[in-house]
Structures are given as structure tokens and as C-alpha cells.
Image (cartoon, rainbow, N blue to C red; front, side, top):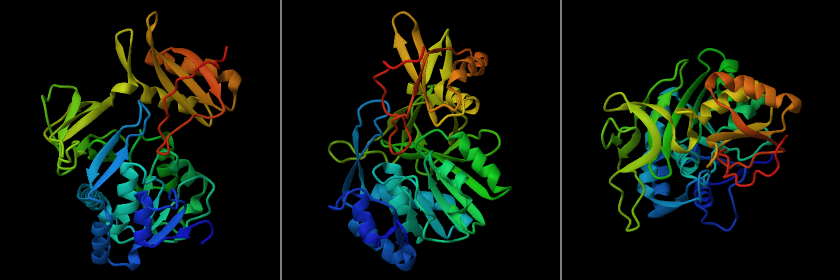
Length: 367
């Protein structure tokens, strides 16, 4: 089994919940398929604590703890299973760490609901998974797609791949992976949510950006004209007294299309206003990634009393450093965006779900 440790289902849950002394979950294979679905549910229900505390990523502020009941998490795992069951996956490859809500549900609980073998891949440089199947469910975070692109043997004798993706903006490498897989080879389902809410909505990736559809137990709250997304759901985080919250307003700007769907326009911390025009930094990064061959990059929104809001760019290990400034200016001219300064770094510090951590030190700046 190479670098993979085979863990029994109960041990996987214990490690995922941080309840054991063995430390973070490493490369793992767990054979939920040998347990049977009824026995799996009984095991999970007994093993899950009444209340589980999970933290936000800390990408836009200090990491904040939020509490969910074990029943809420098990319910959400069942809803995710309903999204993928028609594709008849036979094994799960997960890149999502169970230290966050998405990973705990999709890595530790979803395989139990589906009764499928799990291979957990927590870092670069691992050998091909110890499970060889033809129909896969991949639980993805952004860095999963370069791994899958680089080595087509990772998914063995694959016939069809269903990909769940959450926690961050879909990277351009996702489209490259789909294209490399051929027509009908990959079905990509994106999840929209947060630590405070659990999964809010989903959509299937298509050629054109499609609207998001609310999960079955989620409803809109507030004025439809309000640009902020407000929702209610029995899976919202618990109050300090242990009761589910009645509603939550996110930092996401949306346009409601009807009672069950919306278009997403950007997250508050990723939107800046330049010369009266609102700019989505996720779009800026997408354009720059196509123009700047590099290991990584990120845009940092900056506010100062003289220039107002503007953008600073960090570029990790560019292939042609001398061309970074010119290509950046050319790429962003059509968006009406200028970059205040560009910093070339060795690497960008990101959380284990791929989000850049807060950047407070920008002293090392290129000319």
C-alpha cells in the first residue's frame, strides 16, 4: 500500500475529529465498502460528538470557531451523496482535509453514506492511490487539479470521474483537467457555502457560468433586492447556547433569479472599487494566471488614504521575472485595473484548503 495507512472506519473518524493522540490524518485508505451501509451509519451516529467545533480558514481575519451538531454534519453528507449517486462512483479520492467543515463532511462522512472505499491524499508527492477503480468521485480543493493533470495514472483505469469542489474559486486547471479527460469523462459539481452555514447551493460546471441552486433545505431570507446573500437552514451553525441559528447573512454579493437560484457576483473581501467601478479580484487573478507562467499568484486588496482602494500582486517563482510587470499591465488594461506594486516571492502562504493567508508584511517589493 506504499505510503498509505489503512485505517478502520472508526479510527478514521476518530483521527478526523482530532480525538486521538496520533496527530493529523495522513495518507489513508479506509474500506467503508466492507462494512455495509447500515453498519456504517450506526458506527457514525455513535462516534460523532453531540457538538463539533470547526474553525474558519483565517484567510480574511483571525480564524473563528463555529459549532455544528453531529446530526447536521451527517445530514449534509447525505445531501452531497444525493448530488453524486446517479454517477455510480465506486471509489473516492479526497484531497480535502477534515480539519475544516467541507473536508470533515466530504472526506470522513460522505464515503460512509455511499459505502465506498476512500483514499485520502493530503499532500503532494504521494504514489498512485492504493485503490484501482473505473468510476471515481474526487473531493477536490484547488491544488488537486494540477496533481490530476500531471499524472493521468492517479485515477487508474478511469471510465468516469465526478468531481466535487468547494472552499475556493475554481482554478483554471479544473477546465484543463476536464478538457484532457475528453467529452463526457468528467462531471464537475461546485459547492457554495461556509463554515457558518454548511453547503448553501450547488451547480454543475458547464461551458457558460450557470446559476447556483439552493440545497433542498435552504431558503433565502431578507429583501430580494439586497445584494448580500441571506439564508436560513436547519444546518446553520449553533448559537453559544447550542441552538441552530435562524438565519445568516454572508459576505457574498448575489443576484436572485427566483426563489431557488442566484448568480454570484463576488465576495465582499474580494471586491474593490476603483474609479467608481467594482472589481472582482478573483477575475483579476484568473486573467493573470493565464498570462503569467508561475508557481502561484494572488492579488491583495489595499486601502490607503491617498490612493484609496487598489491592488498589490504577489507572484511566486515566475518563469520570466523580467516580463511580469509588462504582462501584468497589458492583461489588466481592459479591466481598468492597475497594480500598485508587484512582489516576487518564493511561495505564497496558503491554508490547507488553498486560500491565501492574511498578508501583513509587504516590505520586499520589486522595483
